[in-house]
Image (cartoon, rainbow, N blue to C red; front, top):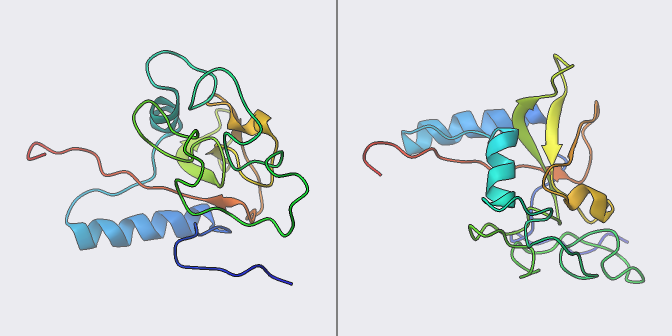
Length: 157
């Protein structure tokens, strides 16, 4: 049985190419640059200026973020509505960087011409992925990867 879906849930199973195409479409619609964050930008939004290990600090609790260890006996597991885990919030007020859905970035791994860094944790992975500095890559389109976009500030902002 597939758990019920709703428009408030994150979109997952997105390829890097599809995420880039959405950003191009959104840029045209907004009349300004819309793009995926670089791995450094993503990590800065998650870590803040104090060098914390996780977006919320240096300790991890059983329900800080929507990770594999959260509610281990519950089934079926489903992605959470963004902001459902209030502890999973960076010092800048950005939610869900440690769990729920892993995210594409615009940064290639240094030793690769094709593999982009995926940041953050998801309900399908352990808390190791929730660490701000952790990055992963995969050659396939994983079902726990989505994206968030950024709109860089302009002179008028």
